[in-house]
Image 1 (cartoon, rainbow, N blue to C red):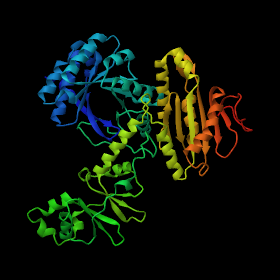
Image 2: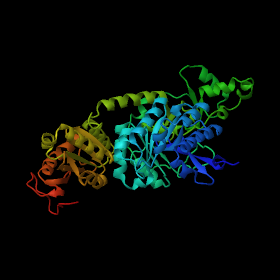
Image 3: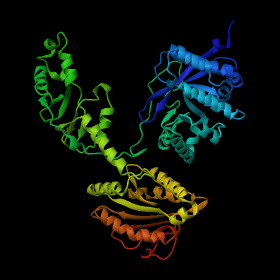
Image 4: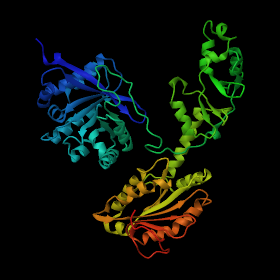
Length: 549
């Protein structure tokens, strides 16, 4: 006699890590071929628990080694407590509990919350991870979400059109210590929105559709340049250049062997053409291993070493350490430790850099950066912004330097308390951080003062992000003042002069009422009032000044 399980099939869909572009786990989805098994499972906790157990056993038959996600209704976990069938299945197939995430999904209405939390506690004690599923398209109360303290929160992709909501959920996840995932991602626009909102994980047909067989290969779109969080410039690669071991591209394997074994510090040889351009890279360990086989030396010694080499990895002499890491990451994992050739504008080799040197230097630089971060907002101080400004000046770039602060902040602290004041400062810092890109740098000077360096064309989106938001603290409305000096290429010699030009604009912005923005330009007198009501200022607005942007 056929049973309900005979018509049951399972599908696997990868959960994608958006930082690495790889599959981080597999969600196992029940796919009954007939009957209302899933509808029954919603009403019958024992059946739902058995479905989760069968999903684990199916994954074991498919021999997947990726971590797993299994789905249960919230009511099931409240009724059954610790999901004995699931725990037995995990133990029987030899998986570890912390390799399994239980996705607890809606409906949550009428589910006894205390019983649900007790069931979650049992799972956690065993080592299972817990995910709050269907958030945004379900009925999970925010208070319950806070009480669950999930390891992962899954949002419905429909929320991606509501950027403020997703960013708020990311903030909540940070407070809970949870990761944020977006499910149902089907388009590259949704993917970019998920990345931009700070989601760490995602799944959907864009990456890979649910399939009968587990897969780990996924499609992840490339983001346009400048999309997403900005990357620090990092130390220049020229600081780490080592002498390269060079031989002509016609060199024999025996010549390369002598070069590699003649000096312990030589980790590889670059074969170059007559113009000094690297054409092949020979890595020490792989090369010597090829010669050490039974007939390796006889086969290769007198033949061109280029046959045992790889295409060289190269970076320009003006590259940064981060760019070198991109080159290393975009290739064969077996070549991670290979030297990277540094070339000049003509493509000639000027030396090599080693990954160990770069990783050590980047670690040290991040420690130095962390020491300079403001403890309240985790934003860098003025030194980081002015240092970047001086780099832009050296490159001949124009820029806009802006100062932002909270109006009447002392009254906010006195009236609403320092805790409300601190939270307001953090909120403003987060809003400014969302504007960061390769064209925008944000710093927290201290107190309620912020400094922003940006390309002039990014000013309007920057102002809209901070001035159009409804700010409040302790129930009282708060406004912000923004002052900007635009400096065309060659108009100022250094950051000190730019700061001096910004000072009177700060005073003018504070003299306006409401959310205000004044903008001046190096080499011109006066300023434009782009936001705020006119008031007495140290310098009169120029003719044609605008009261609104």
